[in-house]
Structure formats: C-alpha cells, structure tokens
Length: 392
Ligand code: CAA
Image (cartoon, rainbow, N blue to C red; front, side, top):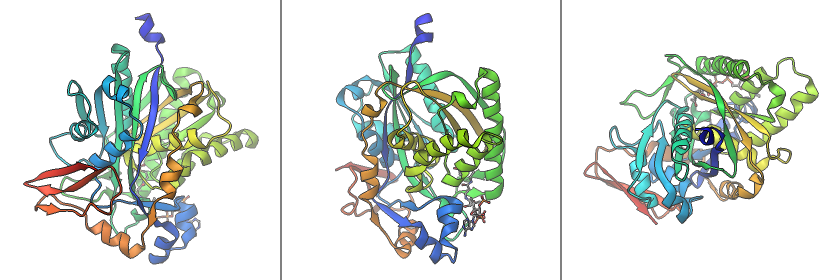
C-alpha cells in the first residue's frame, strides 16, 4: 500500500489532432458585421477549426492517439476511456470504435464518459486509480469533440473541434498528478444539448458566470485543503471554451496580487492559450490542449514545477487539481502541433457555412468523398445505420 501511495502516476504522452481546415476569425467577424477585435481580443480566438463530414468524435480521437502511441504502448494499454459530448451512438462507446481502429489488444476495458467539457478530467482521475492498482499497465484517456452552436448565433465564434489523447502510466515522462483535488457539482442549465439536436443550447453570459463561480469555489477549496498558496504554482491552466474565458479565470486568481508576480502567470497563460486560439473550443480536450500548448511553448517552466488545472463542464461540474513537471519533460514532447496547425488550409466563410451544414445524420445511407481529407482515420459514410470507418 505504501508503494502505491508513493508511486508517481500521470501523463506520459499527449497527442493532439484537429482537421486540416480552418476559418479566419477576422473574416468571420466581417461576415457577421462585427468588429474583428471582438473575436480576436474580446473572445480571444484568431482561427477556428472547420470539421469536414469525414471527421467525427471517433476519427478525431483515433487520429490524436495514433500520433503518440508506440507498439509497446499499445501492448500495455488495458483501459481506454473516451470522453465526449459529441458521441456518435447512444449505446456503443466511442472507445470501442477507437480501440479497434488503433489495433489495440482485445483484452481491454473500453468506455465512454460524459459530463460536458469536464469528462476527460474524470477519465484522467479514474485512469490514475487504475494504474495505482495495475502499475505495469497503461491507460489511454481521450477527449474528443466537435463544438457546434449554429451559424450566425452568438456562440458561433466559440466553435471548433479536435481531440487530445493522453497516455496515463506510472513514472510518466510529462506530468505526475498530485493526490489532492477539489471538486464541486450542481444541476445548472447553462449549456446542454437535447438528444434531438445537433447544436448546443446555451445561456451564454450565464454560462460564463457559472464557470467563474465554480473556479473560485474549487480553487479556494483546493487551497484550503492543501495549505498551498498561489506562488506554490508555476502556472495556472484553464478549460478554454474560448481563450478570453480562461483569462477571466486567471484574473480572478490574481486579484490583489503584486503586478510583478502576476505578470509571470500572464506570460505562462499566453503560452498555454496559443494552440487553443488557433483551434477554438475542443470541449473535453480544451484544458489538455492548453496543457500541451504550455509545455511546448513555455521557456521558463522546469522540472518539479507545480501546475494548477481548472476543469469545467457545464451542467455543471468543476475540479481543481495539480501536477508536477517531470525531469526532461521537454524531450518527451513531439512538437508536431505548430506544424499541423500551419499546414491547414483556409476556407472562406461561405465554404465553412457549406461544410458546417453538411453534417452527417444517420438516417440515410451515404457515401462520403474521403479523397480530400488527409487524415489517417476517416469516416467514409453510413450504411444500414453503421458508420463506415477507414484507416488510410
Ligand atoms: N474589441 C475588443 N473587445 C470587444 C470588442 C472590440 N471591438 N467588442 C466586444 N468586445 C468584447 C466584449 O466587451 C466582451 O468582453 P467581456 O466578456 O470581457 O465583457 C467580449 O468581447 C464578448 O462580447 P459579448 O459579450 O458582447 O459577446 P456575445 O454576447 O456576442 O457572446 C459569448 C459571447 C457569450 C461567449 C458567446 O460566444 C457564447 O455564448 N459562447 C458559448 C458559451 C460559452 O463558451 N461559455 C463559456 C462558459 S461554459 C463552458 O466553459 C463549457 C463549454 O465549453 C461550452
């Protein structure tokens, strides 16, 4: 038992995937008769991922995991958790599809988790418990989503999509998860998606306020539980439905703090929002894309530094927890993200609207043109209510 308590468990690898298309936020603002600075500064987004019909929560997840998993990892994985709020089936889990596409062992547990944008954090904590009991195994935790609010809605500039895959193991190369955590849940109607709807319903301003309320609650609870203070953290990370929302959370944490001290946290925040600004909301994956963004873009954080992470899922659930950077964490990163984001093709606002409206429904057999989608895993169509996935 003492061994289990001392065991270091956490995130060994992080893989990120977003499709090959984006729309420019300044051009979207112009098309919506808004000042571009509202989207660029007020919302804090400069590009938004555009998700072709050939990608869904399954293929996004498989594409993210395939970026980092080795043959040895695949042999050691015996638990796959996919967190999503844009799953493709009311019964079969996204994880069942993903595990097969990745060629994982069949002697595994596969499940899907849902609690809005929070569920990947629940997955991470469950995976941590699993590894404590089975130290020689590895768990794959993926947050995979497409954020959709609808064309010409206030939520439109906060859409996006993609997946973040995390390999959880003992002696992880990136971040160990610390024992303490503070969490809080309450039934709130700030954001939801009825079963019949392909776009989310949201009470925008209310959701933004509830997010901050939950942050203050779990952050203060965490400090009270652990006796830690702000300066025990080297950076604070946030769920980023749009990057301005995280900035508002950080401002709350820095109220009354000496400006020189505060500027350090603002600098790390800039590193942590770089990839999210260019992608948009990933729902379940957003906090972890922000973590990847921080790890790849910070030039000040070092081994042993403590990160504080705020996870939020509407409906609502909040959790504040922490992790410590591992020695040589920089060497364990793949640095593929900037290139992937830069290689994307820009689509016009008219093309984005057309792609947005081409969302696949399961009602009819349909064959999709996969020739233009360069991703490894694609959705080729629907036949007899069965989704047809392909590995290229
Ligand atoms: N230059 C600079 N800033 C400008 C500007 C300009 N020219 N024009 C406006 N702004 C600022 C505004 O002052 C405002 O800033 P503050 O929030 O700091 O006050 C910001 O731009 C946005 O302007 P509005 O509030 O007028 O924008 P809006 O009413 O059109 O909608 C929104 C904003 C409510 C976030 C909407 O996009 C939305 O509903 N999004 C979806 C909901 C969401 O993401 N909620 C987040 C919390 S819930 C969550 O986290 C779970 C999840 O993932 C969904």
